[in-house]
Image 1 (cartoon, one colour):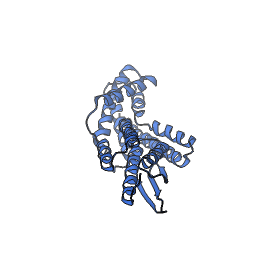
Image 2 (tube, rainbow, N blue to C red; image 1 turned 45 degrees about the vertical axis):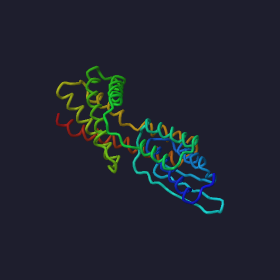
Image 3 (cartoon, rainbow, N blue to C red; image 1 turned 90 degrees about the horizontal axis):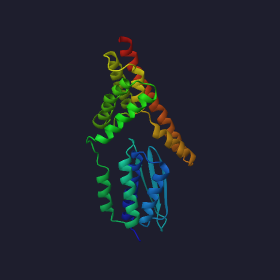
Image 4 (tube, one colour; image 1 turned 60 degrees about the horizontal axis):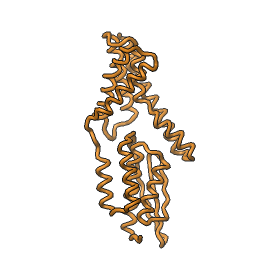
Length: 257
């Protein structure tokens, strides 16, 4: 399939936008690079090089005349969204199998990446079940487990409606942790719970960047040392911000009550 220069730039832009969306959903770097390569290959761009880390993705295409076309995408915000990641993987497979026109593929990509701020009862229940389960697992009572449930709902609502693009992730994580800590200590003070520490432990597990840590180890084992180390450092810093948020709650309300 022969493509002109404009087509090469359009294909490269589409592939990088898909890759950027995958990184923002929590995908592994090697899968992101492979997806960008496969999309470029599907449209006939065989001489393609891709490099990606968690904060940037860049690709270069060289045509038969030796002319290179390079584009880059800066990634400022990241999270975990398996539903969107699954849809992006389906889109990339569709592109490779059917090779649709660029405009149609872009419309599908835009539809997948639309921010959804609707309340999802199943996700909310996942927060609640996880918090209650971890509270009991670490030695909390049944009342402590019940007290962790409304705090988990608050954390879900804060993450859904309060979190906006551009807000510092460390600050937002520390703020969420402080809210959970204040609520746990308040519940115990008024008799809804026996041990504030057990309640906080159950809810703190919702904020620990466990998937990020696992992906960092996996990427280092796969040879992506730079991306793996960056993820590892980010997960450690996020864990410290979680600890700082709960520490603020303990040092303030804990000393008063």
